[in-house]
Length: 419
Ligand SMILES: [Zn+2]
Image 1 (cartoon, helix red, strand yellow):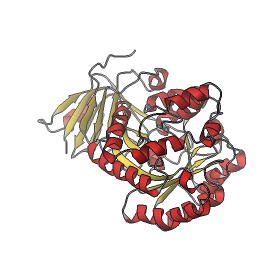
Image 2 (cartoon, rainbow, N blue to C red; image 1 turned 120 degrees about the vertical axis):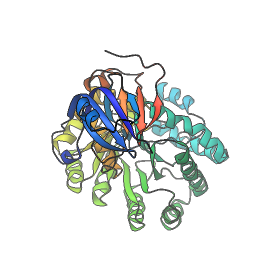
Image 3 (cartoon, rainbow, N blue to C red; image 1 turned 30 degrees about the vertical axis):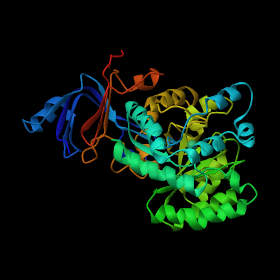
Image 4 (cartoon, rainbow, N blue to C red; image 1 turned 90 degrees about the vertical axis):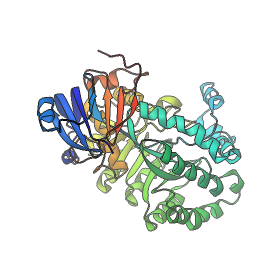
């Protein structure tokens, strides 16, 4: 575990844990900063002269080259373990078919499920690993990853085992989620039987074998009803697993209200959200997760009403939703640009949405999500002059360097400076 002095930081910007319940999202900024890492944790943060004075003389140094230093980013909603792609479906949509029409005709999620069923676990790992590497290049040091393309237990278990193996091979901190995504085709006329199997066998097995620490359900027309989703989430609670919900993407599915009812940590998507739903979520402390890249990619949904969410005192996280059907990107910086334009979020709100508020979704805010003494030394460095520029440049933004637990795990070989 590393000791390191990161010096020559042009500007350091971070949210602070003590501000997590404040309504206004403020950001602490230190120009001309340095960071001392000891045992993989943040030991000193401050102006360069001050930190260097307190640092041991022989500590190895890393020159940030005038970069902007931010906390390592947190992507709190991804579906990165799948096989092949669904490019054909993307173009069908662009030719006029809807996501739900394609799913009803046996495409969509079922297409991915067939491919997962036929693939050996090594192939799943080999195809999925590069997605984690691309995410890392976008500054992400903590990532949530869901199963969900197996559908039947056999496939789901294979995906969760793939994630266990992937966790050993990537530098990021990984949070594994068992996603109850869609009724398998083989259960088309045995729906109740499948729901029972999830509750009585799958969720207990996930908890018993520690395959995941979170359970998520796609509560939506064409996927699972509120009643079914409630049973899943209550079973998750009973087995000590965290709870999150895919809610209100295509309409007022009841998912957001259900998330409040079962005190899920978070509700995700929320393209359709009214005042009563926002109030219920706010009262229950449910974090709202907006996925602007999926709205962009599907092309026919409204963006979630983030300004109204903030007025209703909701905490808002932004995530990539990386998946082959509705968001084929690992770039969290791209999501920030979409959230700036279409959700009207400020630079400070955007930073919180991919750091401390996203860490809150994963119950990880005490260890990651901000540059504060005592936390893990997860740092992203960017060749841009200020926080405002992070969402302003778009489409090809990568971190100049990324550190996890004080170790440099990614450096851009062509880190040309942006002004
Ligand atoms: Zn999703």
